[in-house]
Amino acid sequence: MIEHILVAVDGSDHSDRAIDFAAELARKFEADLTLLNVVSHSAIVPMSMGIYAELEQIYLTNRDTLEEAGSEIITAAEQRAADAGAEDVESAVAFGSPAQAIVETAREIDADVIVMGRRGLGDLGGLLLGSISHKVGHLADRTVITVK
Image (cartoon, rainbow, N blue to C red; front, side, top):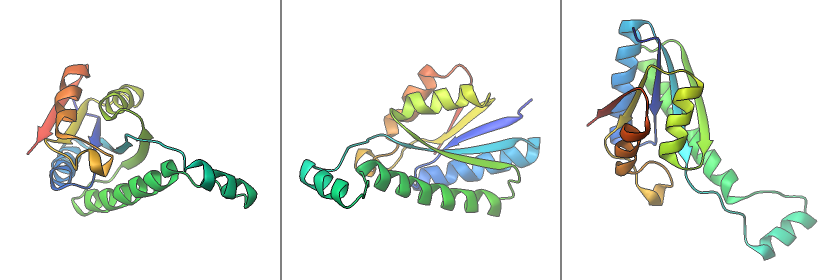
């Protein structure tokens, strides 16, 4: 029985197809759906900017910028899942190693299935790599569905 589905999203075409597939699966099984975007890099602004930011009490980091991009991807993914008929949709943005974050989140939420695209945006996008689906398949202790 499938009660909870985790979908790794990064805004790519493969990710969109994974959302469509997972939303249909969630509808059929009346399962909860969690959308996860993983930001793989976190860096602090350069020292000179850090001093200025401290003086002006501005604490914006590259992590903030990446988190904002992740939130935009999640918002679009939520809309796509809703359009596909998914009802119980949760979402999150995580930081760290994408494969590890996906597997850890699946354990934390007790997902029965992980759905993800075969390829992602790549490292320049700071999100999912195509090899991430391969790593998740090896690390996960639950079913992983890779969508083309």
